[in-house]
Amino acid sequence: MRREPTTLAEWKSTLVAALGLIVASFLAWYGLSRLSEAAAGDTIGTITSVGLVIWIVSQSWYYMTQVKSPRRLVFLMGVSFIQVVPFLFAAAYGAFGYYDLCVVGAKGPADVLYFSYVTFTTVGYGDMAPVGLCRALAAAEAVTGYVLLGMFVAAAVSIYARNHQPH
Image 1 (spheres, one colour):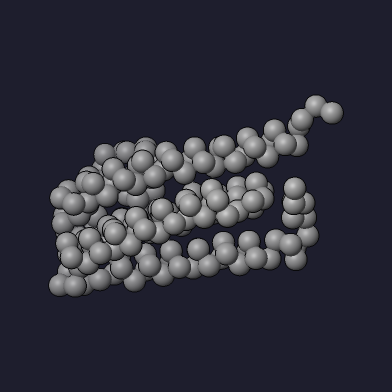
Image 2: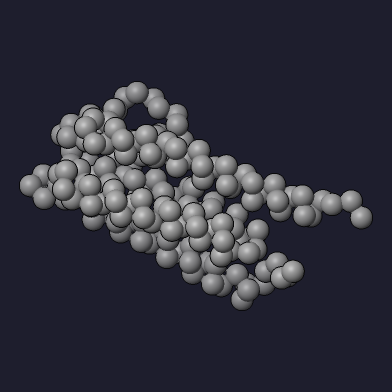
């Protein structure tokens, strides 16, 4: 069994990976949610959505099969849960366009980011609503929120159980 990371040097690769996830998701949201109405639409939105699905599946596979340290896993999943996944879904909503083409009531990047967090956490305030292809995207985001939360809780329980075993 590998020893859990304890020093900053041992955490370096994980911190770099987390920073990379944060920067990439921010840039995707920043770029795609600012497309002009002429550039945004079903084609670019669909391409972005397919890329998002590939990213989510690959990250889930990576977390479940390649990250052996439960503490690293919880950390990376926490970063994904708090920032990365909602930003990437917001980028996809923005790629479909505004003015009621994707999310009724969204007028700009901040609105789709807000809608993404509300959908990801399955709060669903009802002040904005998806339409067209974005309805399927919103449903996928809600399911992703459930699955990622389940994986996060399982990893956290694993750490707790490992540290609190009777001797």
